[in-house]
Every structure is written in structure tokens, then in C-alpha cells.
Length: 170
Image (tube, rainbow, N blue to C red):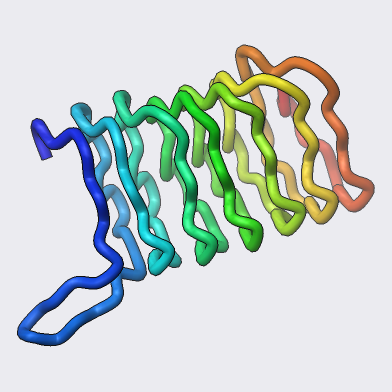
């Protein structure tokens, strides 16, 4: 994908005169697309693979993840620019390990109350700022989930349901 700067994933594609809904983006699909600056993902997408947008250094601006996504898999946006707001879907249940590690996230991070699992190093090295409120239904928080978040300021609120607090969260 050398030289491609913008991608709009269609909601439907036609193959042999039959229309199909685009429902998933595969593992490593756009990984390392160094010139990619923007991506539009349709609401028909319900699955984004591991490291699908990892190391897209110039992928900038805000990102709205479609409402049908329940799991953000490991490394999905690790090492990506993403210097705007991150809008996570309301029905999200899990944020995988290293999902947003070393990304340029700079806005506030609002994790939906439906999230029960945040994997290890999920946001490590991200640059978001403000107050961090962990979701009330959070049960599992991976080691180093917010380790080395450079501009995290304010209050951190832990939910009552959390089973354990691992080492090196921050």
C-alpha cells in the first residue's frame, strides 16, 4: 500500500454480480502502511483483526470505531499516530493487549461501561490526557495497561468489581 494516504472501506462490495456486506478487516490488513493518514470504517464492520492498523505512523486525527465492534484485538492500533479523540463503541467488551500501545492518542479517553477486560499494555506509551475513569464493569486489568502514559493527569477511579490490580499499571 505504498503511497496510499486515505482509505474508505466500503459497506458493500460486489463480486460476480453478488453484493456482500463488508463485516471484517483481517489481521495485519494495513499494518505498516506508513503513508496512510486517514481511514473510514463503515458500521457494517463487526471485527477488526490483530494488528490491522499497527505502525500506521501517520494515521492521524480522530477515530470512531463502529458500534458493532465488541472486541478490539491485540495490537490493532499499536504504533499508530491517532492524535485526536478516540471514540469507542458503547457495546465494547474487551480491549486487547497492546491495542493502542505507543499510539499518539491525545484527547480524553472514555472507556464504555460495558468493557470488562483491558489487556496488558493496552494503552502503554499512549499520550492521552485528562482524567481516567475505568469502567464500572471492569473485572480484568492487564499488567502495564497504562504504563508510561506520558500526559495522563488528574484522577484515576477504580471500579468496585475489579478482582485484582496487577503490577506496573501506570
